[in-house]
Image 1: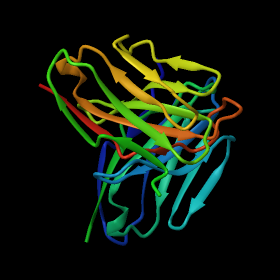
Image 2 (image 1 turned 30 degrees about the vertical axis):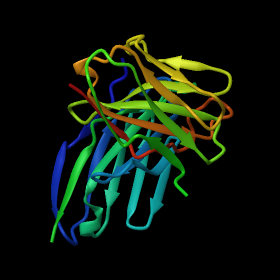
Image 3 (image 1 turned 90 degrees about the vertical axis):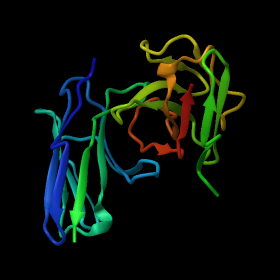
Length: 112
Length: 116
């Protein structure tokens, strides 16, 4: 059974502040690590897919890093805005066509 | 145009019934998936399917069966529905011709199934 852990489970951040949260995953049989953003009443939307140790990806104010040797990834949000409020999911792939193993998500609330 | 669509959006039914949820993707993707969001909001893979291979999560009861009439559709059929089947079911797709999950998945809007 694959264990994908995310912390914290929920996070309240003041608008304008920067924040980050963690995803830990098995360091063996690693193929890819995905980050998704999931707004209430919508579908999860892909933010990043990372495959190589040391990968860093950026999209606007959101960025992510990957350490496959120790099995963790960080997601950073710079200058949080209310529209960043969502649940952020990470998902691990060990390869093959067997889908993704998701963490339980970090529920981020940006307070104006 | 919606990239990944599911019907119905809501499904309320009695215990013991058989029901299907339809999923269609217009992205030309090779692989489709079904996920179940459980009561703790946790997304769990149920099936993945491309034109070569069906992979089933061993924890999924055999009352659940995916049916793919063509590459763009992967429907979920559920026999003898039980109370515990109540959940939100998400369909997803990705371009996975190599069979390796390097590429992002696109999710449908979800189907909320309620079994009474």
